[in-house]
Amino acid sequence: MTLAAELAGAGLGAGRPVALVTVPDGVALHWRAADGRTDAGPAEVREIAGDPSVLLRELAELDVRWVWWSARDAGVVAAGVRPRACWDLAAVSRLVHGHGREDPAAVWAATHDLSPPPLPRGEPDLFAVAGGRLDDDGQLSESWQRGGWAETLQTAAQWAALAWDVYADQRRRLDSLADPRAAPRQPPLALLTAWAESAAALLAVELEADGLPVDVAAVGDVLRGVIGERPIDEHHAAAQRRERDAVVLLQFPNEAVSGAAPPDLRNPQQVRELLVRIGLDLPDTRSWRLEPHAATSPPVAALLAWRKAERLATTYGWSWIDRNVGADGRLRGGWSAAQGAGRMTAQAGLHNLPAELRGAVRAEPGHVLVRADLGQVEPRVLAVVSGDQALAAAASRDDMYAPVADALRCDRPTAKVAVLAAMYGQTSGAAGAALRDMDRTYPQALAYLRAAEDAGRRGVDLRTYGGRLIRLARDPADDRYPVSSWGRFARNAVVQGAAAELFKAWAATVRAGLRDVGGQIVLCLHDELLLHVPQGSADAAAALLVSALDATAAWWAAGSPARFVTDVAIAETWAAAK
DNA sequence: TCGGTCACGTA
DNA sequence: CGTACGTGACCGAG
Image (tube, rainbow, N blue to C red; front, side, top):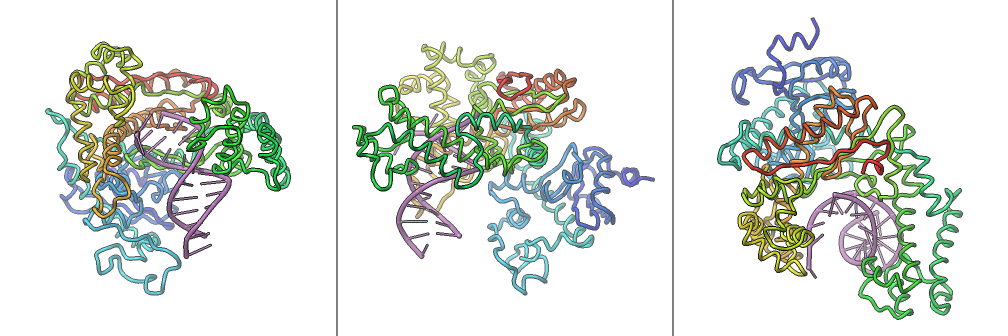
């Protein structure tokens, strides 16, 4: 009898929550026999000795909902297992409690309404090496913070039992959040959000492992065109820099650039002084401020071109390839499933790749990229989360700015600016008159935003539509930021955060559907998904992106006439799939 | 070596 | 004084 069959006989069916802790000599499981209740029935415990990678692959057949401290610690991705469902205690803790930490000690503290303990720093002292699970304050002891738990099967079993308790606590807290609809969903939105956030946390580990397929030769072509040949050594690189600088300096008056040390173009203060020499006295040297002078001033045009090349050379240059692109042509960076208001973030430049490099993101032979982005997602999200019927009616259309323009009696560009200004808290500029009309036409949406802004100004914590806690409470003595900036942050966070929740729910649904279609998600970019799929699966993947959005919106926006729309394109490169 | 500022890429 | 984040160069304080 296989391990999976034996556990299935013990009641572990599909979707059933089971705590899992992986250690070098095996895995520990912990669950409750009674269905539906996290606190009912006797605890079932298994300590299974063996190679954890082998065990995890066998256990994958169970198709349960794995409850783990974090997907990375569980080691499933490293073992080559891609589970369908999970409950990520760190991700849900961040959702429910609004903290930014991912370590078990912070999760433990949040569960017990304690402030997160400081992260252990430096070498462990002798007293910290041994000792119990908890210290005198009820915090996880330093030895357990340092991973002392993850060594033997016996401690793994203890750890799995703790995981179950944290899971039960998180379920209770989520159950107590009111569903933001007159007719509550079943399951409620907060629980669905927790599932999606957990899936996103697992996806983050997968994205980090899989990477983004890049044509390294094509990146080289771009770099050679802009910054020249790959430097042989540091000496050569310095010479190339001097050469690039000289082109710009030649544009300025001789006496301004001919001193013992020429002006440093990388020093904003010196650039400002340089500009004064050609009659431009500006408060700073940001490119949007220089842009208006580029047409009439060759030195400014040269400086702006230099900046563009310099950005490529420093941030996305040869060393960037060396550091982040593997021998398999995959660009890899760290991924976080939720930062700030809840968006996914990525390192290694994955989220701010310049447009000129997107042609170098290329599908591998026999594969294609399938790209999809959500259209006008933030105003549609505002319509749903605020419950504004008029705005939701506008959001039922393919282009929601057209009906908004009609209602405000203005043109479409003005309507778009007015909607964005409302969501971002802009108070000046041309949007002023249209904003007043917005208030009359969409009173509930504007009231929702004002309430968030007010909470931000007063320092009162908020929750997004899906239940993410946005921490706005602050020390009254800390006046580093004016209350107006807290207000703008809060106004935007309730929209941006809810949009991130919808996006992750969509991504989770797509991820699940790809098990049958084939292929993988290789990039998440706030409102955009990029899939890498075998050529024969392209059409199925494109259809999946649409059906997954429909399925997600059906529960996320249940009862609202608002729709969510996406554009899907299939191509060899990211640039071509635009 | 650290944190702050400037600058700039994406959404 | 429109939001978010990540990255790199430079500066001044320690």
